[in-house]
Length: 147
Image (cartoon, rainbow, N blue to C red; front, side):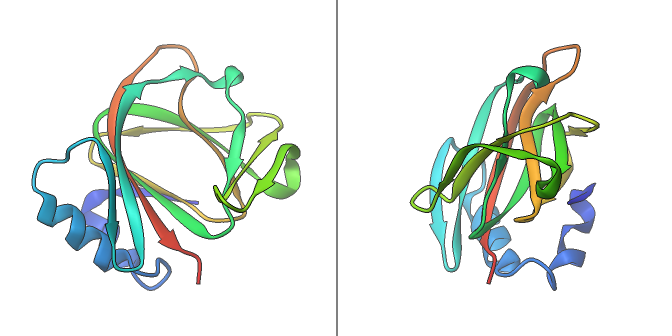
């Protein structure tokens, strides 16, 4: 997992395939509008909502796409655990590139507007969560191919 400020996102281009294509597509959009958008090599979603209690959420993981989640407004807390420390709750669905897992919540990070975080295939993550106080957020979930 990577956590950083948006000012530094391009430093990670060597480990994030098609990052530049995704960033150019986002920049071309201007003001982000809720929905799903395709670009050469991947896609991104513009989402907004309110966080849910961390303990109510399951971990998720993806095998074919790397998540790059960019906070535009508000904040969220994200739970993280390595897949080897989690137990499968809902088996991997290749059509959705998604599996759900359970486990402890030892690692929790608060991500605020102007920051991003990256989840790789080995990173079980609980996005859109909070530990004590609910947050509102607007974010872009950039999906980049693993290969």
